[in-house]
Length: 199
Length: 241
Ligand SMILES: [Zn+2]
Ligand SMILES: [Zn+2]
Image (cartoon, rainbow over all chains, first blue to last red; front, side, top):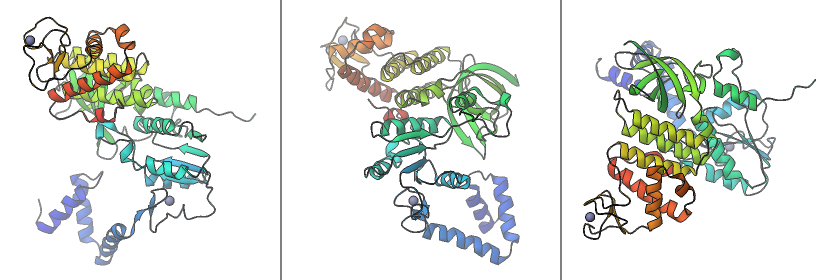
């Protein structure tokens, strides 16, 4: 245990996800030894993120104005929506440069045991977006775990009968892994998602 | 016993640190254990989906001072994964697994509860019956094994032979006209017959029951469960019934 301010900082850092008491201590002492300018930049970034950042009124991605960068971009395809759990998933898919449509951020996955149901996520807002009839394809890109899968099956049921093409990202084998180490579920999914090779 | 091996069903998981999870497993012979799955949240984890809720695994763990650690896990049944593809089966499965977690104690062998939970998950994944019926049958039997068997025929208070019209959760089920406390309800006789069938495992009667009576039966079953478990079962609120 340390004196006042140092211990307060360690306590606050320790509340961050993935930061244990040891790491919190290490970061705290790193900050203590850093230049005042560097620490000020971090302080500003923290203040700004709470003051400036909000959620896009269309897709619920993080945004700095009413609409996020992607929704505000007139070159994006308005007929397809990729549904993801979190804003960080938008970033991951954008990095692939494979998708030219827009997104819809659910804000998590359905998790009954944690008390998170469909009403706690942005399904209703998605429904509103579909009302205009412009959207013809929905790509479901929830996490490749059971909660993500269940959220996808809820979404598929929810969208049934609307005449929209619904696809789910293939969750296959991790690139760089060995086939023999893949578990049965992953391997089974990879089989389902197999594609035709041009011959 | 630093190393142990057993069959078990994953009841739930909690995030731990950056990439690990605490996995709560009801094992066949050791009872409920809490064990750490190291690195399971990484996409390249060798455990993959084996340690997700509803999976039946052949598990090998190393016993630690506070928490055990999974050293090996092989899938025996992918019930959790099968249920996740069908929303109604999945919400029912969550309620089954959460209830089982609530009714069992760590390191106390609970073979009866193990057989019930694995039976319910097998049935949900196999789409043998309406998921809601499977859930209610599980809840009634799990409560009975825990020592809270409801009565749907004879009077729960004096044992007078039924059927009786009045029903009182706190008294333990059906009550005769003499014992009947104020505030008793009068469910449809068919509903009580359905609940008795679910408790006894008579699927002929259960499968042919009417939606109206299934709904009323679910309400009574839920009320029974909430009465006996102090905190409500969260997952039950997500089940559409
Ligand atoms: Zn947006
Ligand atoms: Zn009586």
